[in-house]
Length: 267
Ligand code: ATP
Image (cartoon, rainbow, N blue to C red; front, side, top):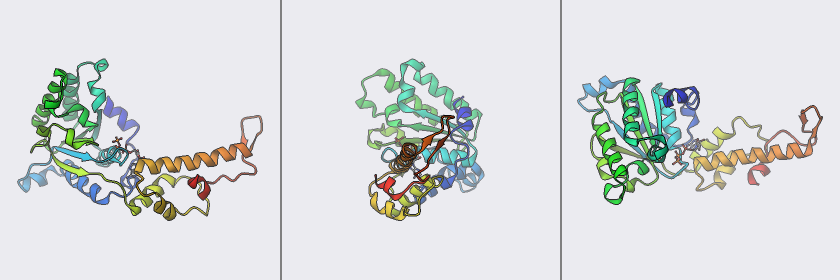
């Protein structure tokens, strides 16, 4: 159900062009996920097993989920997003059974990508957890990954901000044995991300995205997206304040231009 819902909404229409910066990271993800999904025979011919699990780690908002959705969309793989904390939520029933069902479904609908967001919540170091349920869930996840038969055809992606909290057994060969750091974008990365999130906005002539990229040291993808959205909102607010409402619900922005200016971004 989740995969269907996802195919219908979120992931459709996303492409590699929606990911700014992160070229080396994307290249590695494609090599490890896209290549085995598309050409499992290549891995066999070279006598190596296709990777089963890949851990994406980096700060929140750096694009880990975006990358997972993009690869799924581009490879037309079924996408099974799973939130670590949510699956442990008792309201939804038994976590182990739910995990098992997700893996079964993913194998049935292969090629598939199972994406565990905040996997640290789901699989913390077992010596640090107190609850029996949590311990069982880690064990269950390990055995489900070991049991994946359609190697290369079901890829498990995990995302975390805290890779050191993960149970080390999860990072052994045959499980999450590849790790990709999704870091903070550099100036060019920021410029590309700003271009992506402002491309549908009516930008005024005085907006120079290069300048904004220079000014936003330390901003992550999610911050830059928010910056663009807030700038557009500032412009929209001005438009509404200066414009008039003709009573029939049509808003005309007389006195204010329908554009997002440099000042809006700085504000
Ligand atoms: P979390 O750890 O909180 O789950 P995350 O690393 O998975 O965070 P995303 O959910 O992928 O972060 O990013 C949030 C939003 O920020 C994305 O939907 C996207 O709009 C924007 N974003 C993040 N990184 C990038 C990027 N590199 N290029 C374009 N947009 C980005």
